[in-house]
Image (cartoon, rainbow, N blue to C red):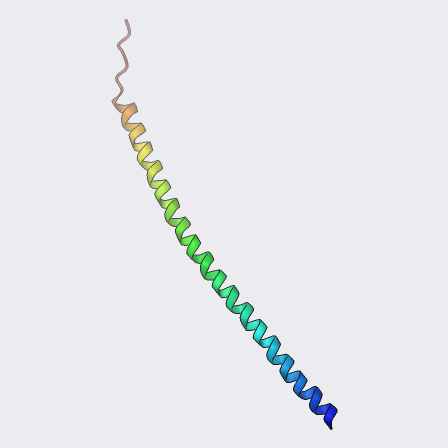
Length: 74
């Protein structure tokens, strides 16, 4: 009977230890997913800023081109 109790309780303890490790890993993955999501948000903001700057540069370039007066041919 002692052998059965040893196996039974050892199984419970091992299950508890494994479940604890799984939960720690799951929490770690959740934290990393949150970090990645936060970084993606920042990158999207930076991308939007860069796209806005490019659009402004394009508008300035167009204004310069449209405002340039070519010299009259002789």
